[in-house]
Amino acid sequence: MIMTTTESSPGRAARPWLRLGVTAMIAAVFLVLVVAMAVFAPLLAPHDPNLSNLLSPYLGPSGQHWLGTDATGRDIASRVIYGARSSLLGPAAIVAISLVVGIPLALLAAWRGGAVAFVVARLLDIIFAIPGLLLAILAVALFGPGLWSAVFALSIGYLPFVGRLVLATAEQERQLPYVQALTVQGQSVIKITTRHMLRNLAPVLAGHATITFAYALIDLASLSFLGLAVQAPDSDWGVLVSDQNAILEGHPMQALVSGSLVVATVSALFVLGARASEERPGLRGWLGRGAAPAGGGK
Image 1 (cartoon, rainbow, N blue to C red):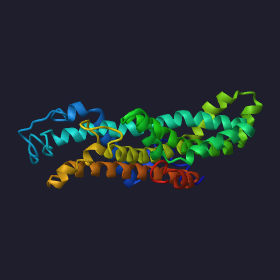
Image 2: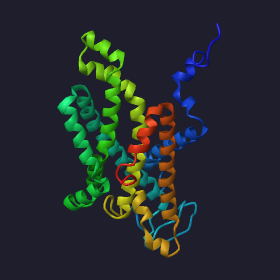
Image 3: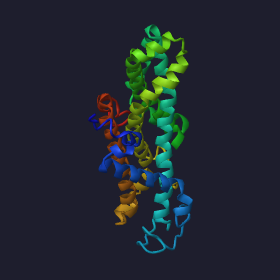
Image 4: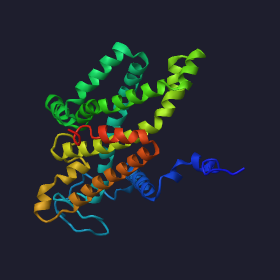
């Protein structure tokens, strides 16, 4: 019997990273390193990121200060390393909140249909019409500037992109024969949803969440740059990029390194998201239509 490529490579199918390709693998490794930098910041940072030394402003790179110091003598490398924490934590919270709220809401609408699906769809359309960055600015005006005010507002702004994706895919999934067979067997809706449908929707959600994380990182960095999210002197990549005085005085190291990390991290996320869309062709259209939630698409 002649075995096809699919039949002869069960180990390859069990190890999805083998299908990533070189570019996506490099992107994944880079993201792992960025996450590790954020998690182990206290061990990696050579100095306290908020420790000032007014006698050592704008020092150049050296063995003691890898990237030099800023206007108040704080170690730039330490601030960049610690800045990864808020720069990744905020987008992760946005993605988590939008998934936790959007998935049950969309699945409920997909199963109940009728008036419930109509109300949920219209609610998502209304939220979709409001730019996420505008919601974030309103939240800052009401609750004051801060990371979590921006996270809460952007989570609402990103909700329609998760909800509409899950609603559309769950409605298609519900029509498949296996769901109907399980229903006839008397299995509950919750059991069918959690054990079968969500598992089949996981690749779509993983790819979408990756792209959403990238846009959330851009939006939060933009808000921090404007002074509406993370506030100086806290370490955050958006805050570090906003140090215009250092740039004007000819010391752009802090802004260059922080900005480069934002660009590199977002690019790596886009590469992985695009790779996921290739694995699931049905996801490609959704990534093109719904992956620019707050800032990029409106």
